[in-house]
Length: 327
Image (cartoon, rainbow, N blue to C red; front, side, top):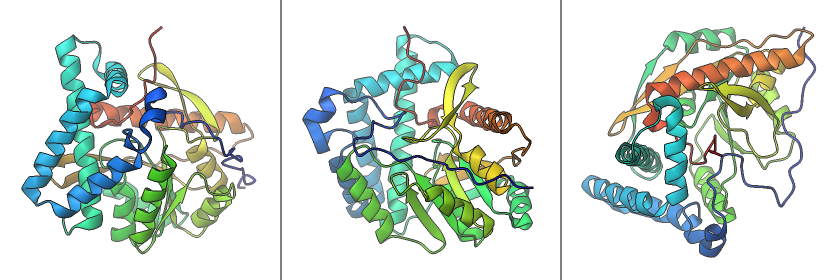
């Protein structure tokens, strides 16, 4: 017997705090406004550059801005270096700088190629590993929860299911930190809405959980992040690289309530407009009398998959807030 429906989110105040894993901005964010790194100016300027530049110009554009942000984003540099010590271990100053730049370089290209797919004819060529896991979940017709992380071309996985497997996909996204940036992203996604692909922002009404459960019970697909809790949602304590971390409970709650499998999926950038999608064996959330233990076990399994994915290519792990601050 399936468990009773469980809410995934609670009402969030208008003056909500910054997302738990958002970059620390402080006074500079307030001072620079839309010109801060998370402000709308950079979103719009990036998209404009991609839309007007030839391929060789896009390369120069990416080199320039990666270098620019590497120099000016002191707190984000520190966060990247600190977080990478978990999978890679401590290192000297020069190696730290190389790690930081390599991560920023990968992030810049993932963002660039994402925009290229929206405003040009250039497309990311995708190869899929673990197709049997996809097909096993789809054949069951119970719906499926894609659980990914902020690694590489993370959005490509849900698009692959929508386009290749003809399933309606519901993607849950955190709102952008800057309201004007959020407006820009919303307009961009709505303006380029594709068939069988719906984006839900976390600031939608709290009936989002009911909407997603209904989608799963229609045999549709829900794509969520397994590495970052969204603002105002419940978390579950787990470990990553042997260190304590609060991960979102939402994917496990969805899977347990709907009886749908959780499919870990990670997308790594392999080169210019090339990506590799890796689907891992599905996770079934137990439905015993001990609800808390069921959720904890599922979240621990998600954490293990996220950790393995990060170890595959740590420089494609995009987390720009220090997860384990040093005392």
